[in-house]
Image (cartoon, rainbow, N blue to C red; front, side, top):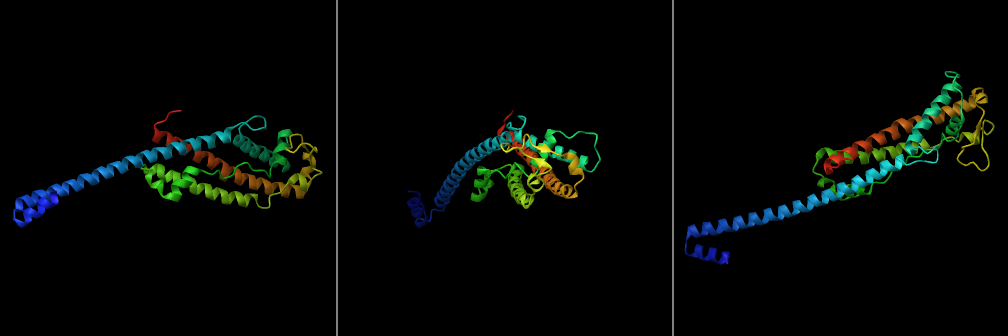
Amino acid sequence: MILRKLADAIREQNWFTVIVEIFIVVIGIFLGLQVTEWNESRKDGALEQKYLTRLHSEIEDLIQAGHNASGNLGIGVITNELSRYERLQEVGQFLIGEDTAKPMEQRHCRALYRSHIYFSDTVPMPTIDEMLSTGRILLIGDDELRTKIIRFSQAGMESSLLMDNIRNDRLLLSRIHPELIQLKANDAAGSDAFCDFEAMRGKRSFINDFADNLGRYRAYSELILKPQLSRQQTLHERLDTALNLVH
């Protein structure tokens, strides 16, 4: 209809009508594009909220998993891992004679037996993986939040590589030094392990092997566990802000 009127106006050289008809066409196209853009923007906003809600749920599950009670005295798993590092440091101080006044206890023996065991692995984050693989990370309009999500993923990959290096050639002290760390046949967790701490102080090979495990556990604690907890908490707080959530 409009095109026929425009063609008739051009044949009749009715330039005023031509200009009006062209103006109507341009306005119609502009409004159509605006409506399409608004509709796409609305869909993108809804999808962004969906991703943020899913990610918030995943990060909460991840934090909760780290704080769930373990079988070791009923404390949180990650808290238990960090506590083990403290016990290992105390064992080290005892072995080199810096703190012989503090008696070595069963908790120190248990930490010593488990000094080759690491709880933390890189936990998959399906929502982050999906956003990055599909390019939908660009739906996150908050630049700061988008950057934190990307860095969270990158840090997870770096931690995974570091974890592989820490685990490589780790030492099972109870297997190498069975005369110093003795286990009961039915005690796979080492809860009732016996450690001859005095004899350990006089055996250089054991001290060397212990120092190797302590160094690995230090890297695990300081370079993986603590930064992991910090990243989880920071991202959780930023998501709470984005979703207007208060806990």
